[in-house]
Amino acid sequence: MTKETLRELVREAPVAPGVYIFRDKKGAYLYVGKAKDLSARLSSYLTSDNPRTRALLRRAASLEWLVTSSEAEALFTESSLVRFQKPPFNIRLAGGEYYPYIKITVKETWPQIFPTRKLVEDGSLYFGPYPDAAAARRTIQAIRSLFPIRPCKYSLPSKRVSLCIYYHMGRCPGPCENEVDPEVYAGYIRGAVDLLSGKTKEAEAELERAMTKAAAELRFEAAAAIRDRLLALRKTLAAPAGFGEGGESRDIVVVKAGGNIAAVSLIALREGRPGVEERFLMEAPDEADPAEVMSAFLKDYYTSRPVNCERLVCVPLPEERELLEEALSERAGRRIRITPPTKSDKNFTEIASLAAEEHLARAVERMRKPIHPGLRELAEVMGAGEMRRIEAFDISHTAGRETTASCVVFLDGKPAKSLYRRFRIRTARPSDDYAAMREVIFRRLRRLIEEKEGLPDAILIDGGPGQLGAGLEAMEALGVNIPAAALAKRYEELYLPDGGHIILPGKSKALLLLKRIRDEAHRFAVSYHRTLRGKRGMESVLDGLEGIGAARKKALLRYFGSLERLRGASLEEIEKVPGIGKKLARKIYESLR
Ligand code: SF4
Image (cartoon, rainbow, N blue to C red; front, side, top):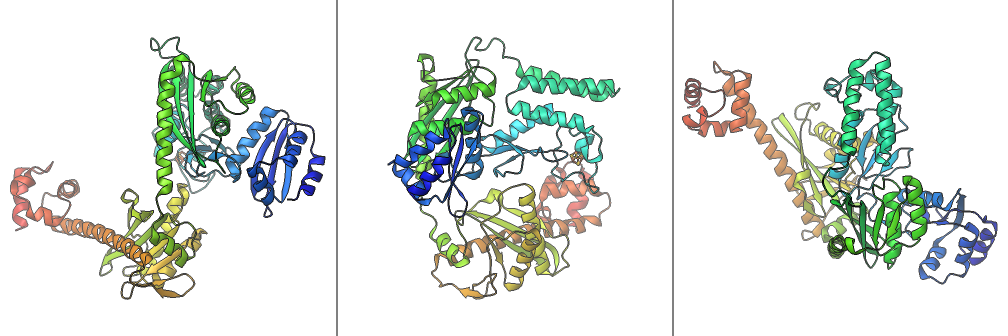
């Protein structure tokens, strides 16, 4: 953007608080800022010789603004836009997908609540960030114990969904079959939103309202259940008696910046008692000024979750300290102070400093780690972008029977065994490898989509063009497009979706990596297949034995796992299986010999 264009635009800018947005020529957000006076703030861009500002103006193609009622409102609007749009010139939490948030789908008729790492502007409410998925899940559990929000992820209303076990266990009020009054369910959602926003009084009031309504409608069982939830909420909110009484509630926040990354450590002290410690990384477009990073962090963190304390102890103090105090106090409905550490904060500030330093050192170390050379080469071959996560699939069966499939996951070129999955093929006809591959890839990706987990960066299939075609069909059916390839065994040809195939040189790092992934998928599929075959063999042997019903067969299967192991077992060992007496053990022992 030339200075002339900028000058003309600035002339139009109002003398009012608001948010301004610079976009590039494709319309993508480059920078979002907020101002007490848009006209004055934007005029300063005309004279700035800050290298970051100059770089921004070189890339900017347009400028627009939104007028807000106050500077505090501008601050929240700015924070929300930065969170969703991730403009490259703003300081923000590192890796939008990295930290989990809690999402409440308030636009749905029967809203859901679940953790997510994807922020989408779909009208839903997001709370967080949380340092890890477990923390977000624990919060959701606590909320569900107070407000029975449905745990399923069906799109409701739907004729195909009916009351499930959660309803019968009293953990869901059954909106799928209109078992709950929409107003009462909306009250539960409001209660959850209030709790996540720190408005505990309002959450209490919601439960009281729901209880009174249920009692007035003579639904005494429902009223009693709500009363129990209300009591649980009051108990949770009650101050811990006799522990740290008189202690002040405060959050200690320390920022350590290094280059274009910064680490934040936050220790929550409640009633003088240390609570959780959380750590975050912030990305800065340039050398980060710690005060600026602190300001960006406080905006991001506290604008979407409650401020449950009276004081934020910050090292260093944030830029725009007074404005932040004003905005956070307005939001919390009571005075929130931002201060440097006092004498009584010293110990905890030191702990937080060490934690932030350690977190930063680890992040820098991770960034220094070179990308696996095979991944770089593979990304070029497959025409893919960043290739962190590869999932590979293989099918195994015995003459068309006991068909199983494996999915192995490699992260940064290394197996992530905890993410491996195996499947029993349900719909494909015996020996139809293509249909089996279609089924497994469809089921795996559908699950990732439904659970809102990220999709892999690439898919590798053990097989040739037929298996690859089946995989592509599965993706098409789900409306996803993931770079994929199939590696055939004989000449190690790599088949690509455009119909072509290549033979990589024997020493190619990409080929070595592909072979390793493919072989691991094969090993995993075969081992599962053997286990199933073993179990099936054992079942058929046991079927002919008098006195062995389904329960005993299950006990033997659980104890030995395979026919081979049962065959090799001593009489004493068989006797140890629960439910198998001496007589029966002898019968089994003899029949296997
Ligand atoms: S009862 Fe209905 S709404 Fe509730 S979890 Fe089950 S399927 Fe979902």
